[in-house]
Image (cartoon, rainbow, N blue to C red; front, side):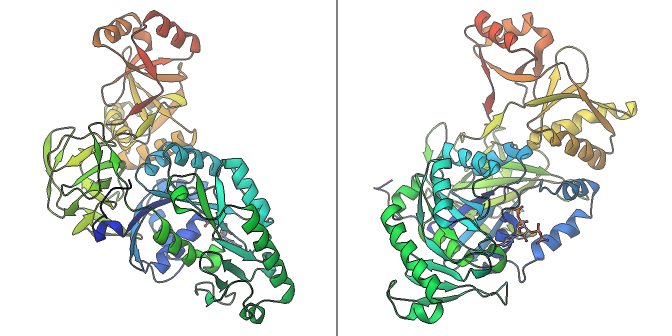
Length: 530
Ligand code: G4P
């Protein structure tokens, strides 16, 4: 990307990112502080309070609350200094990883939050691997330094070894637990001191002239200062210095230390995302690369959320703008259906409130309310036929059959199931033999969530039951070969909500047999949604 002209200022100031973390590491708290410093909320605690008010609206949300997970993801925009931050929320629970994967296709950076006492945890590792698949630059925030934490070198070593990425300290913690005083900012030679008295106050920041500056002794006790000098000397010798190019290519992560709940280290982290983080990146389409600075507007749907407001039964498609300057009321081409679409009431998400988006630029996330036309993977353009790639759909790992316990409502069930399939909440397969549907999910909890949503949003009581199948594979290949396979294996064949052929089985042996008997056919565990 070395020979590209600078991006238009409005695009260049955008930073679109997600936070990845193991549950409990502090993602919600950090999000809240981002919004607080971004002026999107007035007071910490609002995000949660609003969340709870919303939860009382439906029992489905109650399920969310009972299980202590966040099912619905959203996008939030706010300004910080000269930057416009777009924070795309990722659902935290491992059961919803497919949604998370897709969310990560819409961002340019990920912020990885780890708990200073726990280090790299299972979910951190999984999410990190997804970021790596996409070479996403990763910024690390080591949280909860106000509690007993591990030794700083040990934390850094663990990340380096566990995740095979170089770690460059951007700040260095001074003391830990009850003795945690703040951090030394290695990139700007500043001393940042935590204010324990007021959790929402930003720390005091003192410009100093390196580690020999006598000012340090005025603020730090002699033993901690000696330790700090020694550790930083060692760190400079043993650890790589921050290199922006390596960060942008995804092989090095800068790490900041702090305490989200005490608002400490958060501003430095935000500065870091702004200063070093990538501008909106080019997006890959099957036809060509789409550059953010291109004049015509293009974008792709990476998430569809249905029934955000149960009263209106609306759906919102979340669109990442890949290029151009979008203005409200624009007519865009919906590439899949080849139909024009007037985007008259797009929304930007400011904290928990929605606001009409008068304009948006490449890198932004806008929500488009619709009645089901927009699906995950769909492209919107000003006329060009483009298919954005890299938005995966995974084969479900668990399959169950579903039926309504109220026979009168059986025929409405199909509509409800199709809607959830389009939303990406589950895979729905209609077997070619018999009636009924098979539902596939990635994590078991999704069955409970679906049953609860179908009942609340559609008034259909349902029961999930074990099915005879355990694996689903999309069938791809020349038309006549696929047809031959279908005709000879009817008991294994079903159709997904897009009308694509899916092979269902419980035996690996069956899959091997098909691959042997139909060499032209591919059985795929993922399908690109486009
Ligand atoms: P998550 O979204 O990643 O799951 O984590 P969340 O922010 O909800 O934080 C998990 C717990 O860790 C919360 O405590 C939160 O207050 C606490 N926490 C977050 N940041 C820090 C920090 O910097 N220092 C310390 N000591 N704790 C922190 P909780 O008891 O589960 O919830 P709450 O009752 O405090 O809301």
